[in-house]
Image (cartoon, rainbow, N blue to C red; front, top):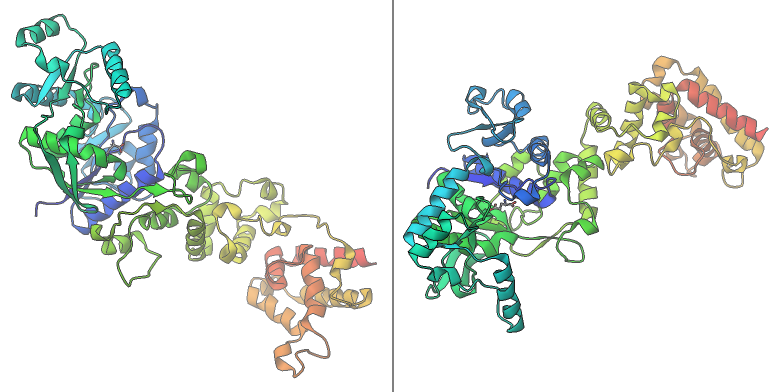
Length: 534
Ligand code: GLU
């Protein structure tokens, strides 16, 4: 087999869509698995859909997600940092993009930005005209609209009627001489029977040529359409496998005809299943976010998002129930044969679950760095807290306690606002455990106060020490026959302590809360609780 060469070929029209991320990911996995090259090519030939800055942010987003390509279009930053230690990429070989000065291109098959390859498409379109596989069409938009209306009236499919195919060579030359607006179309013969091609996901696909319109290949503005540019580039860049979304399946027979017309070998095709909303409609912006960036901004980890996306349309094979995969494990396990045909539902609940799993695995330090660099500490709850509660040390303690219960990085503090509050709003009666009297509660709080004030600041460093002394005071029912110690239940002691420290009934354990708050703040809260009772 030829050396595997695959490409991600986005049209930069805004942001990186989650579907685009999946296409990029599968291409990346396939390339890595097969020791091949992953190329980033930019398909920017639709001038009407140009969005300022979109291309640069798209290339950046692929980096952020860790889908590092081997060849094609790069940002300067990528070349200097990510690729600094990659022998295959030589910054000295980078050429600055003509049309996007902040980007560079590296590789032997460049340029990799289609708007920089226009002369090539012209040359190949001309070849098609010369061989009769393509023809000039001078029809005005007015004529085409009338034709379309007629077809609608007669319930006929939308197809160009090949009117310009009957123009004589002289007529064509005359019109070209006066620069009459024109396009170049693909000439699909009515005699051409079925177009049959193999798809690595869908098996054999058959399409009747008569159902295909004479596709415009060169537009009147001198730009190629997607179809021509895509085929010319895939051929010239020696792409071996075209892995792309199912929405491109209807275009593939046109591409097959183009490969035939040029006498080129077509690459292998793999069309990835559609991404669906839970109601099985096509994943759309209306039903939620589709921009990768939005998910990161919401506090999803890039690793979790990639893992989740990997399973949208692929599974590790029969009998393998593994769901959590690192990128390296995905490379090892990925196989196009395990990509399925049926649409894949984008299930946010599953993403939440997966994200929580990934958060649990982060070290406190890493979690802190992620939360900080993602600006998730920039929320009023935290910004309005005292200076001590905003120190790195304090926040790391909060994160260590919250880590196992976070769904998203952005949730930090939300479930336990008492970590950042200076005044707790609760009713004094909440301090009483069950039917206990005020006096019993006071006694418990005083006891807690005494124990905690006897702990040195050094003792406080260890969560376990704080827990040990408090548990001892609470009595350990496991050691007494009736499930209580000295006739008391743990609740007598722990309940008032919890409420005094948090102001609520449900929270992480009071030891954990005391440990996070620190000695001074814990004692202060106990004193406030005692005051409420007096
Ligand atoms: N430019 C197309 C896109 O935006 C590429 C489709 C293909 O991979 O052939 O998705």
